[in-house]
Image 1 (cartoon, one colour):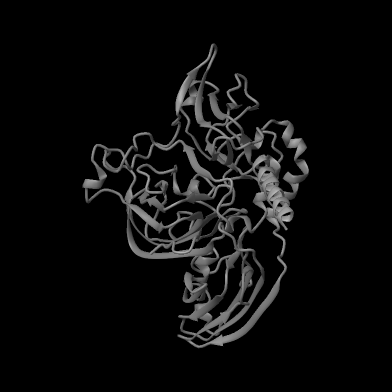
Image 2 (cartoon, rainbow, N blue to C red; image 1 turned 135 degrees about the horizontal axis):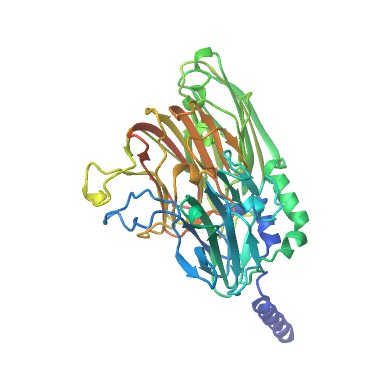
Length: 530
């Protein structure tokens, strides 16, 4: 018996030593592409952990709400610094220590001529050189799922694009821009670069152009899947019911450790005049293990906003015929209940199907949340505010309108903004600001509302992409109803104790809007937006 104990002890020690000596896998372009299309990944707190930051061309006069300049709006041609070379100058967009990875690169301009350079690991010569302020000319061949031209894009003129192809690096990354000439330097250039930073010692494969060929199959597959998500497998929970005004139904999901992999909901009303209103008056609720984490109108939950306009994206879809499909993976340990309430004036017919399958719950697993907020007559000040004043001390100053303030630990996955614009012109001149763990200056400081939602040059026309959409724009002027939505995958923002998202309320002419914001996030037990 004593020999057996000794043998077991030796085996245990050997396993511990082997485990300690087994290095974590290297982060590669291939592993990041796989992460993009694994719908379950976002339900677990990131490992290896990372921080998510953004370098952008926001107006550098914006330093603090306690100082003049907080609502400065000159977001063009703002760079980290100028580096003078022998024959030219290069302006730095990003200067980030690794290990890390660029996970989203958005840009736009009126004049594309010039040279963009990517330097990795402090190399004196660039690994990648693009002959324009235009990622479409970078040779990425990433497909519409990973490299997306904006609705205003012109190959040789106005407009920009957004790159989601991950560009990893081990030690350092620097991106610079060289203007073509002095005239080109006077034209506006805007950019946002979102990047992850991992803990020192994390192994990361550094980008080289050769990786584009090495991972071509994975790049093509990812781009296709983002545009055409695969249907999940699992047990189907179906129900068809009619709800009179004021009625509701609660539908339990299978008990045990599981996850809702897909949720489909079709709505029909006998009130012909209320077909648009039904997406606002039908309230969708979700409870997981006794905690209410979702309670919002069906249209806002799916990213369509008021009116039930079609949306096609990676996580969500709403067809022209009125079928809602949510692909958010929603795990639970014991119980889950879906509720639908009819707050409308007509009888509501609800056809529901949920696909549920087993889920392995561990110490990184989190609950899905959708936080909803609605406010009328929000002041949307004219953009030319007196920057010599301290906005925080001036009642006439513009405001930062808060979408959500979250307490606890989790990961931010995006939002939907549905607006009823009472003005005759563009309302979204303000910048998005994302604060992580009560920081004084935001991790993300944007360059305009439409820029945050992966397009450029307002007012905005309709567009559909995997991670950002404009499903509704009633008037070319932006008067009336507008909806924008953006969700995240590699550019998700982890937080350990708090997260807050604001949008500056700035407009072309000044006035008011009504706004509904739905914020998507995953959080551990006890985290809340209340």
